[in-house]
Image (tube, rainbow, N blue to C red; front, top):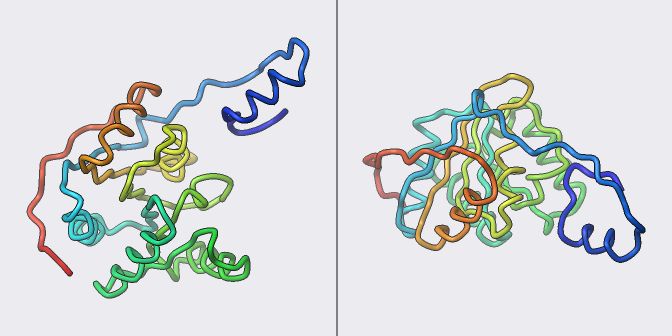
Length: 195
């Protein structure tokens, strides 16, 4: 069995069907020197306004906003466009042709912000992503590592920003408990409330 990650389902298959298997692996690490990870404590109702503020302040070369559901990704993408942000959505509910078109626009820099579900966290080779915005944290802590691993690649600097609402606290504790990462708390900034 070969894979970038071996999840729980694969481990169960391994235990059930393999006789004394040997595991060869590499400890999963994030390059702390190139990746700046921060979080803002925020209320759920303030997330979108803070996201707009941070995108405009940070001015990412290319950025990915990760959302927990397709419905939320659609809404965030639609509302970012209404705020003048060059954004497109990608998730499993789109046709293959539409997903390829969205990715092509992103690769060519025609789209600056990709609003995505976990679909974009694994298996996509996207270069020059300077910023990751976690609108929600994933329930699976390994998915967080895949998300932030979309930036700070091949010696480039990157930034992962998490909008941490009370509904995300358990997920953050699980991530910090499983991985030796440093996610610094950022001081709250003033931002304009947008519809």
